[in-house]
Length: 249
Image: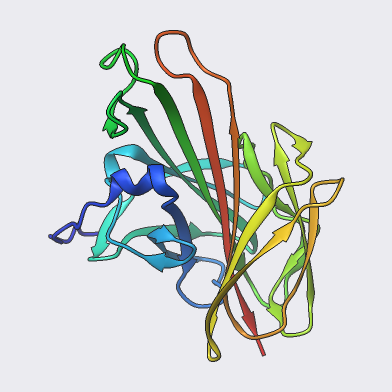
């Protein structure tokens, strides 16, 4: 896959205000023996806004049999990077892009890139880890449970298939393998009826049942922040997980 020379509108630093990475699959499914393209997008709640720097990103795919393979992130267009996923066999491929950044809040109330090592007098230092997920079906009329990727914050489906209007999509948010209850998830939908967004709250078991009321591309965003750090480096950990998928008529 050849690298394209694309001018980058670098909005990486907006991570501190809630920008996140997500993945959009080209098409609805793949075929065994081929490949699938995935677009790596950046912005807020499925509204693109420039791009984050690739230097903070890493990508992998978990194959249907559980094998993990690192992926190259190639230049794409002004508002996306490109992943090309080899799909030798049928099944669900779990694609993940991790995006990492470190920022401090200085005494003047401004965010600066770096950690306490570079800014020992900072008011606060935060490590941001974001995990963008996509489940790629390879084959027709698949239904099953994709392989886990094992991130600290992960959105896990009860079952996965080609979703259609009227379906109920069961998802669970887990933090380090345990259900994360009482967390507000941002949900966005962009389809023939236009763009809209709303929130869903996870229940006591970390689950939501999302009603697919209209066709379009959906994005679910989970965020979790905790006062956990590394002495002399950062004081808090900010985690984000995103899951993007299509709903058809």
